[in-house]
Image 1: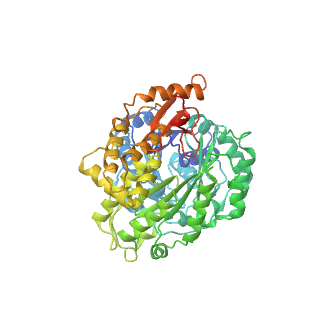
Image 2: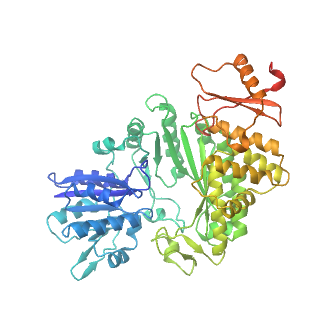
Image 3: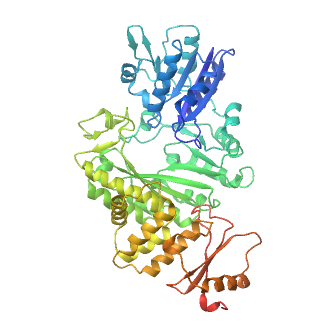
Length: 562
């Protein structure tokens, strides 16, 4: 029998962990004559392409890993496969189907089985039942019958001892982002999240974790993401793993490999800080889920957070300058109104994280929010990703305003392209961060500037808008934009709004060649900063591993022989 495991990733650069966990489990536990294979695709490629890759395997059963980002495309693919092969068995699993089994069967006649929860035990048993045409009696596995369907609401058995990193996985990874886990479950039970439903946190064997770190670090992947929901909930384990990375980075761990962890910032302590600040620049990234600065909101969603400590610890992480820090806020949570969210946004921005994600609440099947309408009243889209459209605390129009601000936050701040300019504009204009992003977002919307416009076009529009604000010195603004462009764009090219027809620029370039010639073959960009009477130049050699910026050097024009 041929069994194919399939997942549609959000992007090609991502790899899947779930299907390879199941593939490895079946490889160990199923009949040795079983032919197993994996097909990974993306939600952005034509369904027919994935369909053809699957059918080339001549499958008897296809098992899909389902998430909010891929469920629509996955179901369309399943329907096409079933229309072509009537006897093909379709199995769905994953968080998007684990808690709405009845709806999946009622809405999709082509689905034969749904596996809820973890599958390393249940899926090998199910495949054996399918092969021998037996009716499954497996915890967590529901199935269709001639008269309807049978739901099994027992918790699935667990077995996290099986590593997904088999030979087949390593061959196909091909430099993509690699995912690994050192624990399952979460010590917290946030009302909007599913991770707490897995029960108490279970930890992988540390020796295995260390060996898998080395395996993935030497696979060609440059980023290894731990999927642990709260990596530092067990401080001693976090200390041991980070210490292992520190001791091996640059030797058995290549120095260009970066590790990503989701952490609770208020659980950091001096022991962890001492290790983190010793890590090489760019070695780690930390994602900090703040979600809200509203105490009533945090209480309503059962999230215990020391906000003062979060703020202090995030700033301390950033002060080291060696690690990328990503923070998250979620709009649409209970008890959070528009003004409260805006205040929290400004507070989060003032910490100056490397990335500030403004997300919007999704009401996931199986979450406390989805299962308790009275406690968590809200309206949300009926189709994936089930985004909240309004609540008793925030209106639909207010959420749309947050989307407008979020769009410019991504392009201006999270892109890393306009950091110096933003610092100047916020300081000189006295606008709050949210006011700047929202007001500029409305300007962009009213002028119908598309998301797909060129960076030069976007820069020109931003320059003209910022120059019109009260308190802005146009020459100083131009110089900030120039420095931003030089630090990020190694072509040295400037958009029309920043170009200068100054005849002295050629003289400045010649003088700098004599004063400090670049290494042979190095591209150099030179500009004049009129607000400070300086020459600024950049030799495009190495980008900073955290900021992504090239180093700028400045020389007072009076110090040049012109």
